Length: 206
Image (tube, rainbow, N blue to C red; front, top):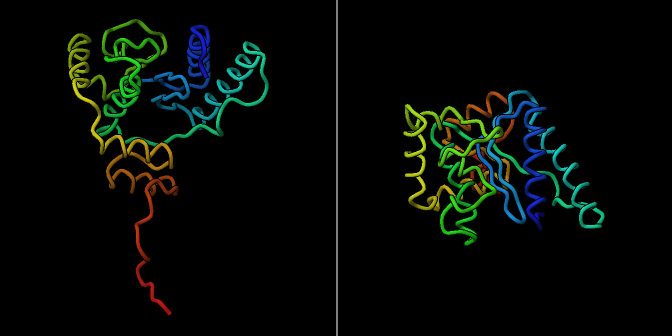
């Protein structure tokens, strides 16, 4: 998806443009060679879908023109899931920004240019990144927040959380405790947790 420096710059530019146009707060991101992760909060109904569709169309047009090709670039519609902010959101920050380390592209997330780590952990200026309320709880000052944030990256993301995030994204299920998932299902009428394994209550073999 990204073959040259200009490709990354183009995508980030359109992420800035359309996140502002459609009122989406971007908290963390990483551009890998063959996929993208974005942690965001929509401020209006349907705004994430509009943002992703607009970026997707624009980038494919650019990429096809740049490399004299035709056809699609994406493997279907983007995948998304809801996240329980209080207990899981900072873990998702880490999951996203540690992607290049898990892929053995760099040894430290600070070495990777195309993620939000240098902004959230090192104070690099950005007109794209919007700190989430949970991020702001990490310290009373910017210096304290960044210091505490960097400390969270001393270890890799736990396997249990990795599995939860991957399953959540791939299936569209929510990431969080059962109480959170139950509340979301009650509010939206949409199933956000897997069905229980086994036969339903009252089932009888005939």
